Image 1 (cartoon, rainbow, N blue to C red):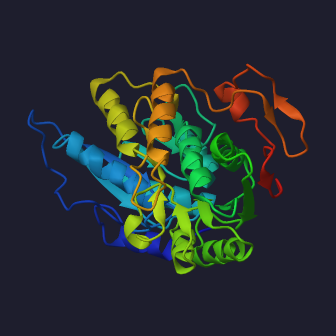
Image 2 (cartoon, one colour):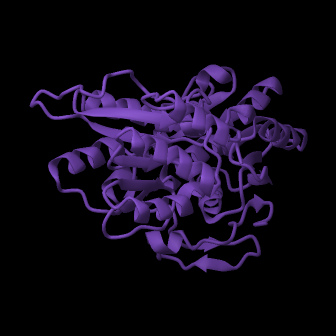
Length: 371
C-alpha cells in the first residue's frame, strides 16, 4: 500500500553508492566523533514521504531531533516510499546495512514480518519496529504509544465544537489500533456532549490522498461539521475547510494545510524515543523492549488549540491532561458500553495495556462497523 517503492529504485540507490537513498547528509564515511570514533549510523524506513504533513513527516521530525540531540555522535539515513511487502522492505534495509547502518527503525506496521526475518539474518544490527508486536531478546524491539490519551482530549474539542452533533472520522483499516483511536476519541466527545455521534468511514489504506478526501466529503455530505482522522494525509482537513467545517488532524501540525478548519491534532514526538534508544545503544545499556510512551513522558501529546477551537475547550483539556500526567485519569475506565449497549468495561475498572490492545469493538455513540 501507499506509493510503491520499486526494486529498480533500490538497485539504482545501490549502484550509485549514495549515503542513503534519502540520506540526511553527505558526510564522508571517515567522519569522526570528538573522541575519534565513527558516528553510529541509523537507518529509517518510511512508508510515505517526509513532506506528507502527517505520519511520515512526524517520524522524520523525530529523526531530525535525534540528529540535533546527539550531534556529532549519529549519522542518519532514510528511505521514503517503501512498500509494505517483504522484498521491498528487506532490499531497502540491506542497502542501509551495506552502507554501515547498525540500527534500523522500521516505521510502518506492514514492515513487521520482513524486519523479523532481517533480525535473524543480521544479528549484529538492531531493529526497532513501530506499532508491531513481534520482538526477540537480542536485537529486535518495538515501540508505540498511548495515543488514546491525546485522542480523548481531541474528542473533547470536537464534542464542544460540533453544532450538528454529527462528527465524522476517516479511518484507514478496521484494526485494533484504529478501534482504540475511534473509541477513545468518542469517549472524549461523549464526556462533554452526550448527544453527539461519531460516524466512521474506512479507506482501507494508510496513505491515499484521494480516498481520504473522498471519505471526508461523504461524511460532510452526511451532515458532519467536524472531522477527525486516523490516516496519513491532510485530505480530510482540506475537505473540511472547503465545506466550512472543522477538523482534528493527526501525527503532525498541519495547520497550514487548512488554517480555517484545523483545531488541533494528537501528535507523536518520536524524537523522544529515538534519542533515548540511540543513547542506550551508544552506552551499551540497550535491550529489546516493547516501549509504550505516553503524555507523561512526552512521547504523545495534543497540539495547542488554534483560534478555530471552541473557547471553553482549553480549560477542560488542560484539566484532563493534568490528570493523565499524574496517573489519575485512565481513558478506558468503566462503565463503557459497545454499540449494542452491552457493558464491555465494568464500572470502576480500567483496562490495562494488554486489554486495550484486544479491543475488537466500537463503543456506544459510534456509527460504523468493525469490518
